[in-house]
Image 1 (spheres, one colour):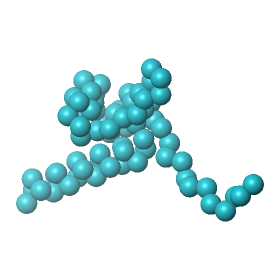
Image 2 (cartoon, one colour):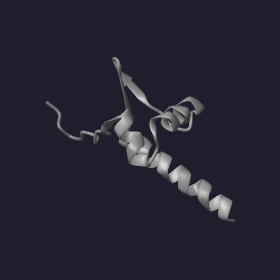
Image 3 (tube, helix red, strand yellow):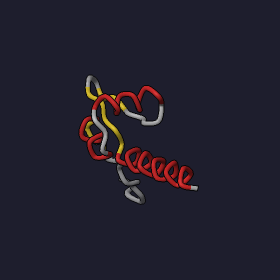
Image 4 (tube, one colour):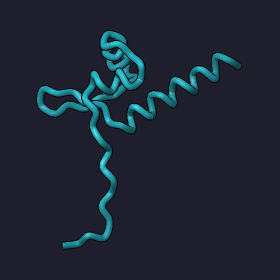
Length: 70
């Protein structure tokens, strides 16, 4: 068995928990998902957000905030 390199796993966060981490209510979270500003993955009936997607979304909010301040 080759164990040279195993890439790190990007954890999946349940959708409602993920949007709560960002500070969104469910309605706004679903609106962001529908608008394409937030991406989710499905596993059967369950919806998840990748941890990297939560970080990307927060960075995009910070970038938008900086643009508005300028």
